[in-house]
Image 1 (tube, rainbow, N blue to C red):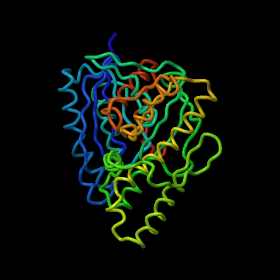
Image 2 (image 1 turned 30 degrees about the vertical axis):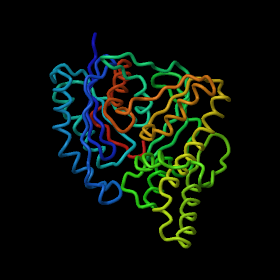
Image 3 (image 1 turned 90 degrees about the horizontal axis):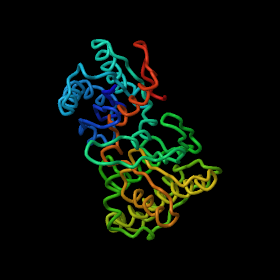
Length: 337
């Protein structure tokens, strides 16, 4: 029997809906919120209001693009958390109402788990290579940095995580100090292509085990700029490309060092990348280099599945539907799930 899942993603500032049928993506629609750019970050109240405006047309677009009717949907998967509570409430409420009206089950999804599950989405027009179990996954986003051991579609163990700031947060906050627009990570990535990654050296925090830390790097970067600007007020403008390249190089090195240690310790040669920062070209190149330098198998999601999207929510919902792991109508969103 075919299973068709509607996925709803509203954890932050993107309203997204997708249709997955038997693990194959049929549509993946998204509405971005440009209103936050002028504030230099996401404003929670504005985000939840925009979700209310966007969610019905986005879901309607996803269903039409998939070429199905509402009656063909077997279940509704939604992001329960983590995320902004107001934004999560919009998606959760819509999922409940849609499912109740059609008498179909709802499926709660952990946003972080879904980023990993995005590696298993099949495309209708081409073959996609999926990682075998077990494999290691480096999950890197604006709010989270985790190193995970994956032993099954829904069996995941966090073996390392950031003890303070996330890698994506380090990108964005350092970019803000340099005067780059929000979100800063993509701008750093673009400018880094034109710079020398070894021009400047920044602090690499020493953390025991497989955990990460990026707070010290941010502080090192801030103090470095403060001292150089005292000597030359135009320092950032004159060295922007090299600053971005060196910053990106440092963050990637920190991430890759722990991944390599974990792979050796676990005896695993299959490694994957997931999360919003997986769209960073430098990080993708570092993973691709592992194929040659270490003869590892590498798995990286398509760009459309790297940032927040509903396809990964629908795919996770599909796996949970197959196990009959349904939620009740009284379930509430959890910002810190």
